[in-house]
Image 1 (cartoon, one colour):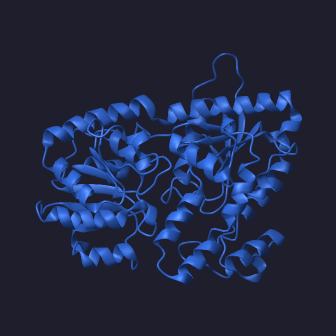
Image 2: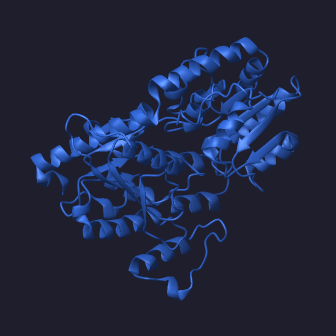
Length: 428
């Protein structure tokens, strides 16, 4: 463990995680790696989370704040037994789910507020990871609050509504995303908002109407001790690796499937490994069949960081086909492994991947033809792959590591403490 310098005492940090699955989405990844690096700096970090609980490293405490776990993989949208209901928050959670809404941000925030109020003297600062629930409105009854918004979920809402082709689907999505109205209201009252990119900062200011002076960019990154080039690895000819959820339109996987079909007409050994779950239905499943590339596409899920790094080291190319990203951890992890990257220019991806032709090959989002052309160029040019691999790794080491993220985040904790001390009424 690294100790604090300059005479500053270590901080006692409550890091909140309403949904911490380390294998699905970026929130679990963020909580795991940030908490580890804060602990290495000498701070005492306690993660307070609900199901799916985050995977944490040594030196970080996990306090379970259980929900009804209504979306567990083994029994999604389940009906709990009567004796599982503990209080009115559980009733609210179940009722919201049964009426088509997503209750977890609100109900977790209410449980977290109750828990934190009872332990007010145990923490110097509370760090909320994108819950944005009414229970976490700033208050003198709680320690100073710092909030991370990776990107406004209103972006996801817009993209999913645009992709919905049936009225029933659009109505269902509007109900599901009703919680974003709460998040907008809460965000406007937050004293300190951290986000991961300039693109996300602009979206937060525009969508949530948060004053620009309260929104601060702290880039995240890759664990470069795990994600690094492996000189002993064999790059499999034609292998392309991507990390994408098939059921999230903003991840753009359907466009990469089409690009793979185009690419294989000239490079028949091209094949795709998707870090995610193979869909049984939906646009991606239909595209795999329609373009005849189901046999050239493999899906893997639930793998460890070490296994993902090995997979990236086995690929000739990595691809990020997303229509939008608030940061883009998959790009940073691929570049850290020295795997040359093809990426779209959606959202914050250019901030991470860097300039076209220098550290990646960049293409417009949603353009399968451009994806196919860039991937074909990369797979056919060993010198280009070597150059992008070296420059991509160097870019990550300069700008996007968890050590840098933790140090910058701790500075904002101290600023929040100083603001509370200077004006206690500012956090009501």
